[in-house]
Length: 120
Image 1 (cartoon, rainbow, N blue to C red):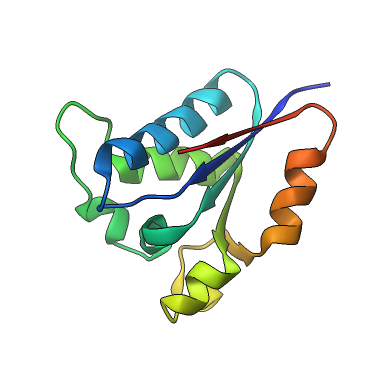
Image 2 (image 1 turned 180 degrees about the vertical axis):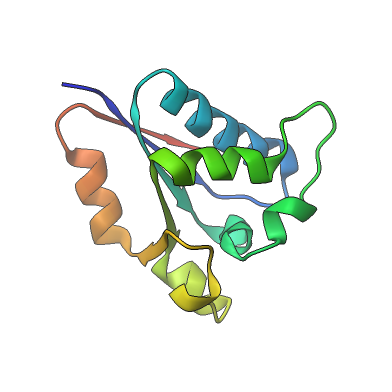
């Protein structure tokens, strides 16, 4: 059975290195053959809005939009329900393929056999 990696990004432009690390690890895990679920919480929720990831810059880091595209192409990307609500975001405002889900779904993913969760 393939391993599943759940990566929770808790920061966006407010902590760019931590944010970039979460996206980098998620994309790298996909390249290594893991199933990946990337959760966007707090300020990282904005990165699921079209055009926002393209605006994110961090010297010596892969472009965030590219990393997000990799995860969207082969994994899942979820914006936290409460985080979306606090920012008045709805699924129709997010990139295609991004869903909104809450803590129960996050916990279910984390407790599944073969799952490993990382929080950045």
